[in-house]
Length: 168
Image (tube, rainbow, N blue to C red; front, side):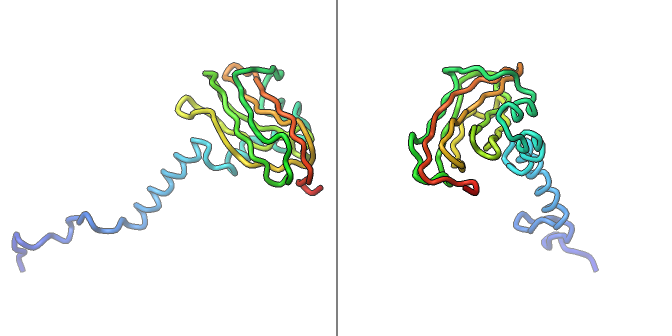
């Protein structure tokens, strides 16, 4: 039986047709790779810097990340409350205007694990982040910009915690 030209061929893909499972998996894998490359998967970022997150001091965390000595800088900003009523959810915002930033970190000096957050930054990402972190007790908090040349520039803020977290 011959097909008439008015009937659509079964081989023609219609624009409302659902993608095949293979196409869906392919697109999902491509999206996951793209997001992982931008640092939007915290678990992947944590796995790549496991030694830094396992460190028990700020100095050990910085050494694990291959950063140089810490230097205070007015080009790195950190904001947060002076007094946190509950150490379980303390809001912070940190950023820098410096060019050539490789990573932006948040460290809490007296936490059992001082490295709280690590963001890999590229020229396509504005180095400005807001998070909520746990503080075990009153402590100095550092926002650190690790530069492409290895320098580590920071801003520091003292936070008083009235009710601790992190298992205390």
